[in-house]
Structure formats: structure tokens, C-alpha cells
Length: 137
Image: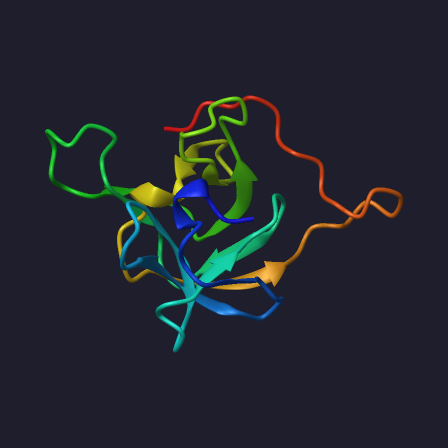
């Protein structure tokens, strides 16, 4: 699954072991992940996908009055979908061990992560359960 704002960007599903980099895509208003070496292709994650970053994750501040990036203090995260009832809101987010949720579009550019594990897929439905209403910071 890729955020609605990546509808016009080439994409592919994530695979275990993929090395991803946080990227701003041409022609898009959002950020997401691309595989290292494939800068124009968005890598779509399913809710529950686990990632390990090379360094502590950094994101832009929620309010752009402050221009300094915010360090999350974690190197692992799980992909989540948030704001499911808001059609034109960003949905792609990361949840960190502390419980903090950050929209992917707020990640600082150039951060490298490895896909550790994909979520289990429901045998009788063939898909991963959507996340409930959440608030992303």
C-alpha cells in the first residue's frame, strides 16, 4: 500500500531484505520509500511491516516554525496506516517502540532502512487488516 499522493508514481511491493531510502518523489507532494538504486520507484509497505534503520530516525518538526529536525531516538519501527476515514489525508506512518507515530511524509530525506519482516497475511481474506483510526504526530 502506498499513500494516495503516490498514485502517479511507479511502485512495487516491499520484500524482506530490501534496503530502502526515505525519498521525495518527482511529481508528488509526499515522501515515501524507494529501494536503494531505484530512486523513481516507490516501495509500498503493508501495515505491520518491520523496518530497521541504520541510524536513529529523524523527522521534520510537526510545526514548521521550528526548522531543526527531531530525533526519534529509535532505529526500529513498524509501518502503520492512519487516518483511514480521511480520504485526502496522508495515511502512511511509522510506529516506534515508544508508541510514537510519525507520518512517512515527515521523515528527513536520505535515511536508510532494511525491511526485516513482512506482516502475516490473513489466510481466508488474502489481505492485512487495516489499522483503526489513529492520530499521527
